[in-house]
Image 1 (cartoon, rainbow, N blue to C red):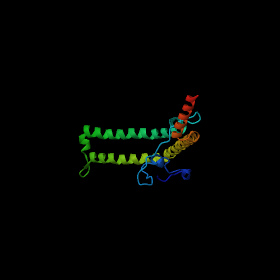
Image 2: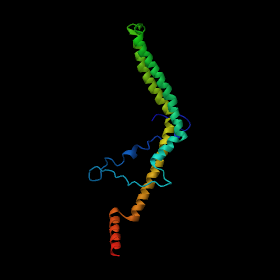
Image 3: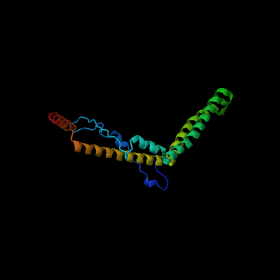
Length: 192
């Protein structure tokens, strides 16, 4: 990540919260040299206090911070895209409708068409640089904060579900034991 500027530069978390979360468990060895396949915890229904992941993302999408990041993005991308398309279309139209203008020599064998064509390449690189600079200075910090807040909430939700799942297993025992208990209960009911 590039150098951060501004008063809160030291407070920015630069590590990616989802880097390890997405791939953990895949391709890891189980001690015998064979790769393991991660087992997802059994789905537990969300309680009224615990929002589902989709609800968390929708809540973040509706938040003022997310809307501000999106509006900063649009305020740069829409005008930049329109300006670049206008410049490109002007080049194409001039090349097709005014060949005598494009053939006019500028310096030696270099004509207006060659300069404008090289200008297309240069403007592409400048637009890429301007976009990455704008993102770094105006959006990345806030977007990373949003990402961390979603990650923290989904991780807390996942930990809560895992605790609930473990608590349920402790109360009822492993699935085989529950099946055995169910059979014994059913047989006892038949004897009465």
